[in-house]
Image (cartoon, rainbow, N blue to C red; front, side):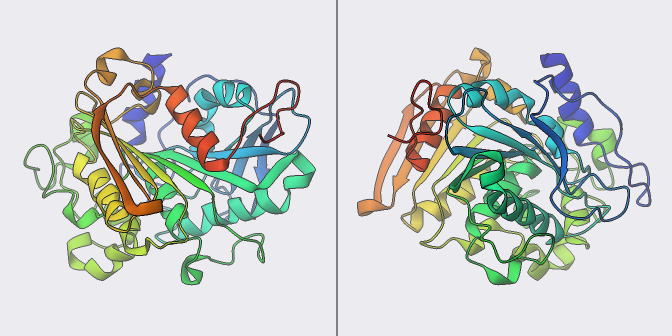
Length: 359
């Protein structure tokens, strides 16, 4: 399983051989159960061959009432449009805990530039909320998770639920796109500072293709994943790049956010997750930061299962009420930590035989 996950993570960060090539390299997503409902179109396909407006839905087998929903969108350096296919690893533990899971795809940077990806995920949230009754979901308890560029999607969704200019008009409208909790694994945040905080000096022109999971390519290059997302070399258009920085939008209305980041990440510097947490901290926001000194750039499941990566991990937090900050303390990040965070933030406890009942 982990061999497939590692291969998938590597290939997710391999850009197209040419700018005009939009099809992603093929690879097998990690194994998981079959969706309860597969390839649901939450908005019309754009372009026609895009998978970016599709989602998978996984429902708990024993649900007796409206259940909370966790959205997952997988990372790909914004280069692919099949993020829905990487939700499988979450399904079994979250379904057992009484949560529904939606794997959601957004369009790639070859199909749309920012804020198109944000418009997509918001359209998915609106569709899921509008159709909650049909699928037995609780529209008032929706969380979002993602890793890498998917972590950026999760963070941006969390902090822009009250930003009309970034709502978009794709698909279902007239419904809130706000989420009630977010978990971001190693998210890019302030992309213009990624090279400055990289683990090692970058090589201009190296590119993700040759660099692979070892990093060393320049995020400032015109063909970097971040520049492709923004639509220009990020240092040449800092105002556009700033619009894609989630720290810019933090407000009192935002939901609790958990961030997990490896200190040995060669692709998205640890400082990116730190920047987001510190901004939330300064705003007296409900936030949790889990730092794993031995972890690199995922894959996310190993953050929660691999003792070698969990060793020495610390957790710190800040709370809105009283603006209380807890200093770093040793912790073991695992699925239990994730489930507890979701339960606490969504005020949810599953009752045996009634997965949808709150306590």
